[in-house]
Amino acid sequence: MDNTKIVQPVIVKPEIKLKRKYVKKVSQLPVVQQNNPTGIEDMLKLAITNKVDVGTLERLMAMRKEIKAEKAKEDFDKSMAAFQAECPVIQKDKNVLGKDKITVRYKYAPLESIIYQIKDLITKHGFSYKFETNNQEKLIEVICIVNHKSGHSEKSKFSVPVGIEDYMTEVQKYGARVTFAKRYTLKNAFGLTETGEDIDGNVKDKKVDELELDNKSITKINTARNIQELNVICKALQETLGPKYRKSLVEEYGLKKEELNKK
Image 1 (spheres, rainbow, N blue to C red):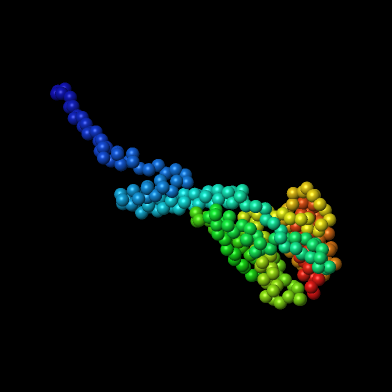
Image 2 (cartoon, one colour):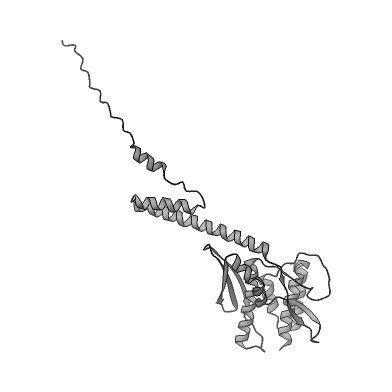
């Protein structure tokens, strides 16, 4: 019997080494960091040069879009913070007189005055703005869109009821409401604050944090059909809201009362 063992040949696989040229290319790929558009741009150019597949290219394009949007938002916030730090308190330079045409009942800042006081700073910090209007059955919605040179934009909305004053034409009612809403959207969009004399002249140097009325409260005031209803509505709001809303409440009360007195 043949006891000779059969020895199987050992197959040695050749060692595969990366070419130096390939390793060098991988090491030179840019590292994409958050909010770094330059890195993603370089990576995108390299991908196009190397003719990567469509799926990879689409992912890089989506990443590029996201990074640019984040950077634009960051630039917007920085510029807005700088604007608000430099922006002065808006002066109320419009007098509303009493029936004697002499006594100043209160003061406020008209839209054109607000724009005049902030227009140079808006341009300086790279902002622009525009208004859009949506007409609904019983409400007029005004939207202030603030754009920044970085490409980011933000919106502020304010709605007012359609006017019912008999002494005004439909065009006058519409214009008055739109102008009123533009004031509030512009102030809200840029975080503006106002100052001036106490609006009814009765309380001096009262130290309270003043707040603006919300849309719901202003809508209630504008539903008043006569002075009696207006007094009832404002008294109820005053009891509900408290002293922090006092100046804003009296201002809206004065505007509405002036409209009703013209009937």
